[in-house]
Image (cartoon, rainbow, N blue to C red):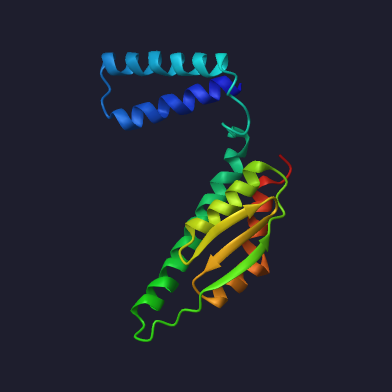
Length: 157
């Protein structure tokens, strides 16, 4: 099933990037995807971590939440930049990651970095060193709302 889903994802990606739907390009896409999946199988690199399709149903609710968080943070950073006194208070904070899987930890670290005004500077096991542009941004992370949301994303899978 993992191979089939990988093939479907790769083929859909091919179709979107191609933009041409002639017999030649569709056939070339099928051949390219089949060759890629066979090669990946022979190399034994198809696994749940590299192609975490089982997270897709939860990702469909997580991504919209993350997009809203990114938009809110972008507005906050814009207000800071446009403020005449530039009210920043750069802060480093250590944040505990309560995720159980590598996918969960990577999702949490990347979600922090995608959110304007914060960046994950270091990952050491289940602890992140995060730089925030303001103390309030650091406090929001320390409260753990994003951590809980990512933990819910990976829960029971």
